[in-house]
Each structure stands twice: as C-alpha cells, then as structure tokens.
Image (cartoon, rainbow, N blue to C red; front, side, top):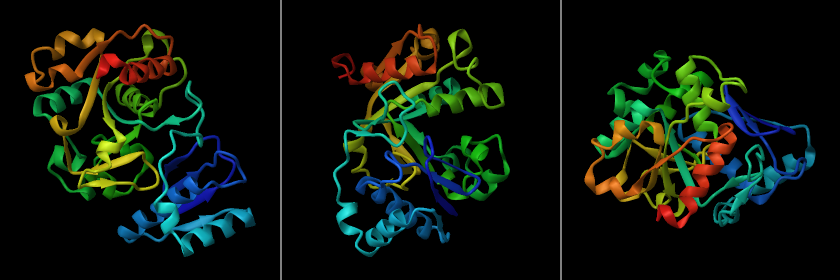
Length: 276
C-alpha cells in the first residue's frame, strides 16, 4: 500500500494508493496524524506494508514524531467538522452522524431483515471470491483489498459519496455532472447512525480512511438513528418495514437541483427535531 501526501483537493483511495489530503497543506494537524496512525495500524493488521510518499520534510518529521508517541493522538476528541474535503455545501465533513447509503433494492432487504450486513455476509462468499466478482460490491471499482468486503462502510453524515456510488451502480459507469443533477439523479436510501453510539459497537473499526466501519453486521434496532428514503419510493416500503422501526423511517421529496442539494437537505432533516 502507498500513502501519498500532497496538496490534494480531497482524500481518496484507489488502486492501492491512499491520496491523503490535508486541510491546510503543507501543515498537518494532530487529527490528520491520528488518521494516518490508524491507517497504518489497520494495514499492519492485514499484513500489508505501507510506504509513505511525501516531499515535505516537516510533514515527514511530524509523522515520525507521532509514530514514536501515538497515544496522545489516538486519545484526541473528534472535532465537530473536518475540512480535508470541502466539496459539500457545509465546506467540511460534519461528524455528529455517520451514514450508510445503498440502492433502493438493497435497502428493502436491509429493512426487512432489520440489519446491515457486510458483503461477505450478504453473498455468503469469502472476500477473495468477491474480489473476483466485480458486480458484487462498490469496493471493486476502486480495486480495494479483500478485507474491505468484511465490513459495512460509513461516510460522514453530510457526504454525497455514497449517492455517487449508487448512481454508478444504476448507470454501470462513473456518473458525470449531468447524471448528478435534476431528474437524472436518483438518490439511494440513507441509514443514519450517531457516531458516538456506533463507536461503542464491539466490531467498530477506524481504518483512517472511512468515517467508521463495522465488521460483519449491524442491528438496526440497536443503532439506527433514522432512515431516509426518497419519497417517490414510499409505496415500495410501507408494507415491508418492521413495525418496531417505523418511527425511525422518513420519506423525503427529492425536489433538489443536484446531489449537493440533496445531501444538504437530508442531512439537515436528520439533524432536525423531526428525526428525533
């Protein structure tokens, strides 16, 4: 694995390279050093060696110092906003909630069963087998390692990346700007969770890339804060949602201009008293 630190617009990992963005390049914050430490720990857990690529000597020295004494960084309190990516309307990742976004048909199965499952649990196959079946998971488009299939991935609550993956699944290609606007854009279903609550889950993992990961499965009854479904699919869900979860499910009209407006609208609803 290669961890590349440069003046990237946003962080991301694909083809074995983690493009590590900083909120104020070339300055690296303590929170960013924490992410880096967690990433290295996760990769070591799966027996992968990581090479760090960075041209700035001060950043390299800060990393060496943090790795020599990681405890203060690992005990840091989560900030309310993270600004390594500022593409969203809020100009940063808001950290009260994390979110799992999935296509409509997948959401029906999740709500019927009452739990989110990792890909290996959904398909009853090993991670190595699923890597070879490119249609089985969004992780395949980024050539992520097999162990990713053992986890349920979460993004920060106001992020739109999950809906991009949903659209990629619908189109069978990467969406362009037109695909993500107006009537062309078809949002997925969002499952929102409190970060503070999810962090206490016995199978919680922070890999330094995703906001949160849960291994194997996650029971909705125990952890779901709210579920937001595009209103034009309401008739498909009303008869299948378990009564015990009904009060946590909401239908929101997609009257938005694009994916950015939708992400802002649904996140604001999740934070509002209506979703409590």
